Image 1 (cartoon, rainbow, N blue to C red):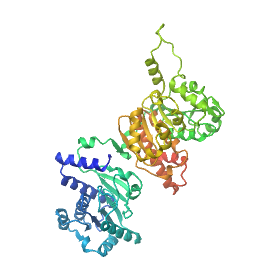
Image 2: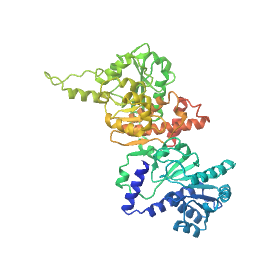
Image 3: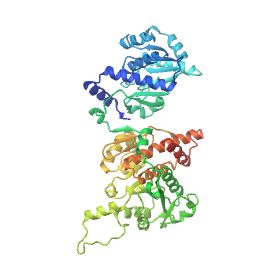
Image 4: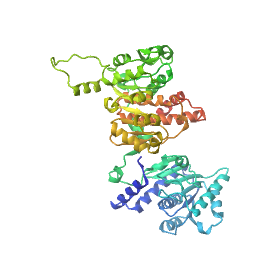
Length: 540
């Protein structure tokens, strides 16, 4: 699913119209697709009643087309016209048996109240994506009247917003006080970016995208580089698991993590890598943690690292390098802490001082600097950098040039601020733009965590995960995410694909955990980890 701004959507529709797909045809496709969603949702019960709030714009037209289809399928339908004349679409609905009411003839909202109260489905097609706030008094008053009726009902109708809930700014995500909250928003052709911003997201309910017939090769559509992750996208990214597979088929995730202060981070990341399908997980931890962790994680193999007072020491770089030959992906950072000894470890790891010494066959010649750079890059496995690893990384001069590209970086906004010297406010105000800018500049994949996690690639592509939940606002959930990504990377997924799939699975696991526990406040990182298997089972 594409994620578009309102101007981008207008340009797409204009270009489609100029290339032979008329606005009228797009509206017919949108309305019939909307009706199909409704019929799938409600089944074939012909005793149902739909009441449409129909504004003057295109989403009002979509609503009328959908009501006509519902009428032809046996539904009782009514359209409440707001600032809309009896155009051809209105006449078609009347011919199909639909009832037409005019808002200007219902000044006390008596008819509006009566029909909302008897409806099974309320279609909100008053205002479309082009509106700007604040709302005009006449429209605001009508929406207030609808909300008052809904609030008084013990069993209100199912509310479906057409393209967007009326009163939402589909670019900024701002919401009018009078906005009608939807149970489902059916948006046309692409998700409008404002719907994946707060507070609009809270008013949109579930979201579904309807095809309006746009050709895939439409240039204006191809220019849009931002996608919205969904189940079908992630399903297509996951590796096949053949019947004759063995553990080597699914790679080895090497996880350098943990310290005396943050023991659990390593455990969460390692188990997440296994849960997402890695064939083998090797835990590289300070040796003093082994006794505490091994009994809780019998499936792992272990590389015990030198440490200073429980924090990874400089000497650990050479020890870790002994496992590179077998590793297909390497995670660095969860639970590291910020000790100087660990900083020296990361410096040595990335500058090549940890690499096994090789005897050159070119006697009498010094190795060229470029050859040294290439040797260092090929010596390191595909990398994921998380948590304290990112903060330590930021202290290394030209760090983005010494990482094997493309690495996956998983900062939250505070860590992104350290990496970029921007404020967290600047980052949060333009999450997609900032992530895309620095992914291109650094040459690495960025996973900017938080509500609506953004994954950005060096080629300009980006993906947004359509989840915002306080269930994931808990210590340790980032370690689970890092483990998922390295587990997928170990199985051979490209860096961007592993980041997209891992972030989506992680977000869904948070929702599942909250649902299982009945409270977002009670979710622990371990609950998110345990819910990963439920999410994975839905993808098989």
